Length: 213
Image 1 (spheres, rainbow, N blue to C red):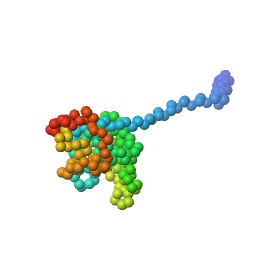
Image 2 (cartoon, rainbow, N blue to C red; image 1 turned 45 degrees about the vertical axis):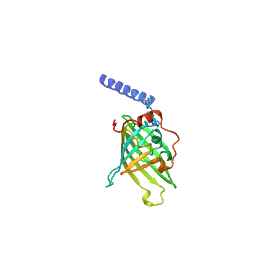
Image 3 (cartoon, helix red, strand yellow; image 1 turned 90 degrees about the horizontal axis):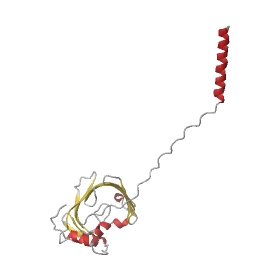
Image 4 (cartoon, rainbow, N blue to C red; image 1 turned 60 degrees about the vertical axis):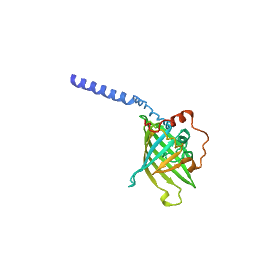
């Protein structure tokens, strides 16, 4: 009898606890920490190429042709006008040009260049190196708006460029040697030089031609 009474008391206590648990308000969920905000790195200008004689190799991925090798006499003004690939003076035709530092002497590259007659070339890729003396560029270019189908294409380029010394006394800024043929980029593009090279650039170009850094 006593055991039955104890069992009844335990049952009543259990029911009371269950009812109390049902009436208890649920705990609010723990606050969720907001996702970190990812801020895009702002564009920064690339270091200027050091004035002097530069050798640039341009190759097209997947092409059986050998790399194109150019030697260009560069001063401060030539450097400002050089295009994305560093082989002409089309730099002024590019808008929305963005160079994003990625660390370890690496930059991300995005650019859109109007090539005339409605033709537009978009570039995206990366640049590795200190840039002022040498660098490697891997870039994808996409051209649209051309009148001929073969003009509208996607091309992947690898560009390596390095300063190999001073320009010779016979060379002037903008002079380029391509496959043994000498031309001047300013004469070819019709861009007029708006001033001489700085005193620093001029003295640098006066170094002996056999100086190689």
